[in-house]
Image 1 (cartoon, one colour):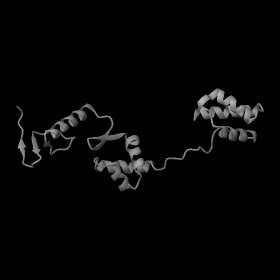
Image 2: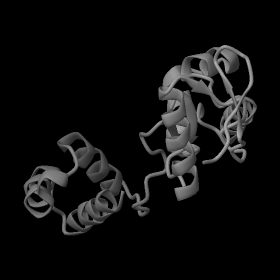
Image 3: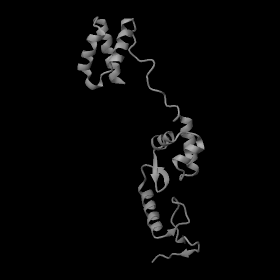
Image 4: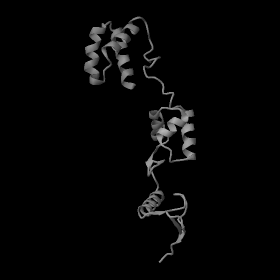
Length: 171
């Protein structure tokens, strides 16, 4: 953005010096190198300044506005994820009728989340959250299922997959 603004100022300067667009292009390419505007853009701006335009700001930027990842859609995705963090991007996409790429962009960039053990969670975990996750992974690899949520305190009562309660006493 800043580089193109500088180039438009340079084009306006060349117009004031009565340089043609063909003379302006090599000067801009030498000054700005690979960041230089295209020849077509240089001709367009040169013509606009030659016809009396004074403002160097672009009123109609070529970029399309991102309407899909609007604040409303971010809120809808956040609310849905707060109800169940195990939802996949595909399921969120189908539920909210938003494309998968936009949902993925909202989840990863706007909400700062990523997949952690088949759940969408914050990208940066606290030490406590890491320890709890590691403990749960260790227990699940041993074939033991915790009847508690991942964010509650561990209890001495552990329920194995068979469903019959088993009491573990500290030794």
